[in-house]
Length: 162
Length: 395
Ligand code: HEM
Ligand code: SF4
Ligand code: SF4
Image 1 (cartoon, rainbow over the protein chains, first blue to last red):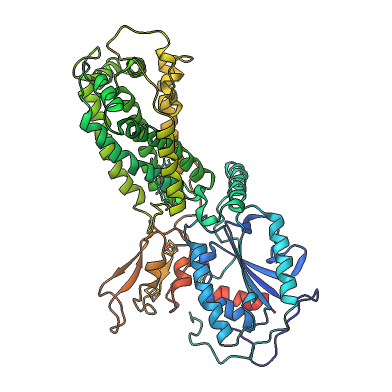
Image 2 (cartoon, rainbow over the protein chains, first blue to last red; image 1 turned 45 degrees about the horizontal axis):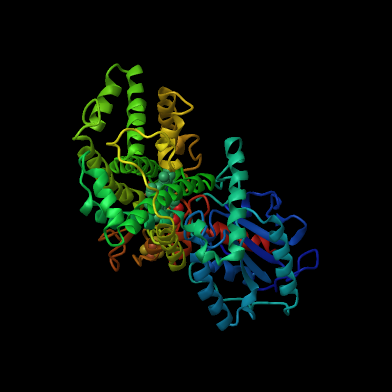
């Protein structure tokens, strides 16, 4: 079952008082480094939770919507520099899909600012860029008003039952 | 269905050998990113080394055909025909220069392309076929280059013939007569004779035809191989070759038919093609042969040394009841791993069903993001499990 909360408003701030941010990390980029705790939290940035995935192109745009519906204030996707995807096209593909999807989220007034979805194309190096860019992203999100997405009607496709 | 768990997730590189490569991988990416600061990343030539090699190959073919119109493959006339072409034919010297410099560039770019693929871990697992066909292409390129230098039939060609014969004959140490047989097959007898150059012309053009075949094999596993670099890189490459051909005319050599002149052996050497010949000055022929054999043997089996540990464990899996046959996954798959099979969709309303070819699948999940109908999944990273994880992480 999806646990999209229908009754309680999601809490938009993390324990450290900063906006909740969710990230999808391509394992070919920084997914292999030790900047992430076991539970997916970025070291030193408790408000940023991450999920490791094989390629940025794996991200289903639906997950981005689900994240916003559940209180995320920002979502980012980390991939390799455009042109250097380990799977050749993954980052171009997610780049194109997000362009469409974020436009739709804004049109449907699910998010107020297209800047809430960030794409970082850092690749296997640039560890300092990683923290720097996340800091910038956090600042950008903090400047925006809190985002609370109205509870949605149940999603069309229910979870598979075994 | 297995839930998502980070430790089940295939991690590409683990320990030992892999950890060492990881450092080089990072260095390569740093260089790329430094270049990206200067030129936009869409134009970074390092992302198109294979395409540049391909482009140089495309320059080599027509310029070679042009040279072939004038070339006479006999020991008596070869040198003078090349000389005539260079000096008398309109732009002949420039076209010969294009052929030479594009050839130099091709082997250089092929080696860089190979190193880059190795250091960024693009050489094993689902990439074994591109890699092995690449090694064959490299061998063919090197061989074509060597026979090309022989065709000119100048004094350098004599040195090369001699070196090749020596290197081949060292095979006699393994099986008596084998090396001699190869050497005789190469030059058409014990000594260079009237057959030698006809044979050499064949050994120059024949492998060139094989290159086309192996290029086809090379690109087989990619849905949209970047065969052509972007316009900027294309113009840069062609410009560099033309500039070199126009500004640096090829060196003058002396015909092989006149008495050997001291110093001709020290003529400008192309270190990539002629490395085996050059190596003979410090190594014995059997040593050169052994090094060459060992090098190519290692390159051939590299994809399995060590093999990718995680393969065939997370291959994309279609849920036929959900599939509508919309083809979106097949279009996005970069490795051409999804075939749309007519008439096998369990739903009578649809005809086509997506079917994944396990051997081609890279387990990247790009198809999962493409499917609007929840019909294709990575078994170890179920999309619903990830969705639940998103919710859980934001609690
Ligand atoms: C000699 C002429 C060669 C040419 C013209 C050539 C050209 C190319 C091209 C155009 C691609 C597609 C690149 C892309 O779509 O990203 C490619 C991929 C590849 N090449 Fe080559 N190549 C050559 C030699 C080699 C050699 C010597 C090796 C290694 C031994 C090699 C290994 C590979 C591998 C592993 C791939 C797959 C990379 C991927 O999937 O991204 N190639 N090559
Ligand atoms: S995971 Fe999907 S997109 Fe990736 S190679 Fe396999 S079938 Fe193609
Ligand atoms: S995208 Fe989904 S529904 Fe469309 S063909 Fe592929 S698996 Fe079937």
